[in-house]
Image (cartoon, rainbow, N blue to C red; front, side):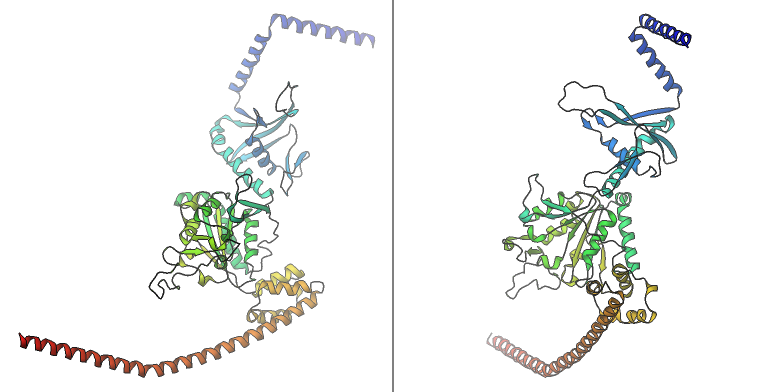
Length: 521
């Protein structure tokens, strides 16, 4: 044993002597040049090339590093042996990432690449105004040399776009509203925001499934249509009009659209906007991938249909709803009377040059009375898709029963189901009214169904009576109109005869005057 340790010590001594001899014979500059030449020869012979993406570029955070980290979090399998978990600020989701010095293979357009997460200890720092973290983090990308152009031209842009989508989905959505009177906050921002927590989705929305799927497909085509809009020369935006009776789910539809696309919502209160210039500034301060909402547009401003309004008043002066389309606030706020924007300003806001200052925006208008809106607002390009939010139908009723009571169609008695199907269209109850009946009796599912059926029957009887009354009034109105026409027709004839007699008398007098003048001449 003693001989073993003696031989080991002598061997270490020989190695130390050789190392000192090499340092004397080969100075540091020569060793560095040799290593550099070796690496050059290695890279020249190797079929791969390497790219380093560090976490900190100088003194600034490298945005590409964060994007790669988010992108790889969507590729890493949850069943991996060693993963890192992160949760960003204002985020409701946990992301998975590569651990220290781990690697993963990714594929893009049929090309395989290798990502390695490299973490090393940083050397001791001298005095610095901005202390750096103790660990130096970065990603190393290994690709084949022949794929270099493809990776650098397309792959990095794809990673940035994918990371933005992941970041938007993970972060909590925000609900914005314009500040009172167009005032700005400390950052010069005209919008105030709160977290948007509305739970409405297309799965819980009480609506005909076929119509619902049509809306979802349209939204999906819009969100994925950047290339199409660029090719056709159109601004990347789309307008929706939600109209129908109150309580039919227009606000829930907007929330479902935002949750489906992952967009923020800007709730624009027009009564707080004083001029067209303020309206444009509000639009310029909205972000892309957002939904701009103007609810109850027929109530927020005195906006009428120019085709139905009298453009010429009794004294021959044009009204304020003529070509300029002036709109005045409906008394909203203390200075509501001073609120004045033009219809032209609102049209440019939705479909003018100023509407193109951003991309991937959706405009949503809601109204209970579509006939009150000006046709210029309703045309394609401003309100591209008109969605009628109707009373509760039988398919919508089944969705509500599933949402509030957890009852499927198979859980209901066949007789009760037929009664519900036969009476729901006649009742003309809104989804809000049906939901209230179910919420009050949700502890007893059987009682809830019975109460709902009884409420639908009562509403159906009331609706039938109203229809009969309208028909009776309609017949009485027609009879009265016929009587008025019968009474007015002789008078009109007499007046016409009197007018003819007066015209004839005037003509005879003129003839007699002309005859006397010729005789005198």
